[in-house]
Amino acid sequence: GYGGGDSEMLIGLWMRQRGNRDDVFLIDKGGHPQGRVPRPRLSPEELKADLDESITRLRTDYIDLYMLHRDDPVIPVRTIIDYLNEEIGAGRIRAIAASNWQPERIAEANTYAEENGLAGFVSCSNNISLAVPMEPMWGGCVCVDDAARAWHQESQFPLMPWSSQARGFFSGAFTPENRDNGDMVRVYYNDENFERLTRAKKLGEKYGYSPIQVSLAYCLNISFPVFPIVGPATLDEMDSSLGAMGLELSDAEIQWLNLETAENPL
Image (cartoon, rainbow, N blue to C red; front, top):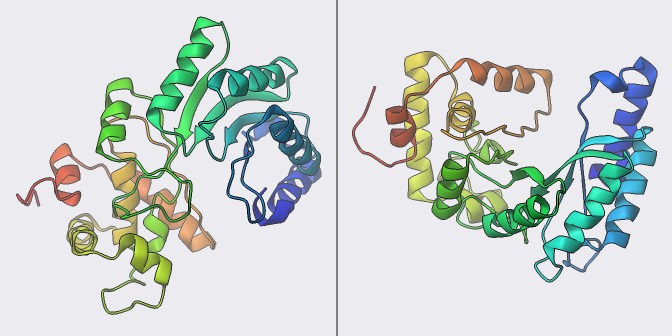
């Protein structure tokens, strides 16, 4: 779990004190690399160890949606799907999803599941945002490129993107002159993304939204199912993210924001 498991323990305590477990849709993840070894931990034994720990910390007996942090192409999809379905059968997992998996591996896993009467992945969590990363923020992570976007569009396979607001790139904290954050410079600092920021400001001024709200609305208005993951640190940031749900963007505005056209729809 995040924070060395502290986040799971706090959520578990919060649910226990309020008696609201049945009212909460709980999403958790397993299979993250540990220590200095970047290898994903996706063997049945490693996944079971992670799930055991998560359920104990959360003080629950099931997780509604269980995601895998990474993929390991060395492990056959049947091994992973078979194990996860054992946990579904045991009632410890209700549904499964993949994070940082390539579309072809997701399709392979779901084809195997369908052919064998098993549950497949119901969504994936790869990165997409208005700011297009030049490389993933972390090793082993997957960003939605043009080919993956076309796959999602054709299949309508749901996406739950991490860093959907590009780690605050549109917050006003980042300018071409401010290069203090080396990771942000490495991943997002190029002329195209700063042009996207400029366009987000212009569109936000038209409708009364901040640039970071426009960036989240961009994800919400993509023409396949997208459920952006946000990471508000304050109640104001939470209110800002929720406010973005009120901004509906046209296809022309989506294309203009993403630099697919120079024709200004405003």
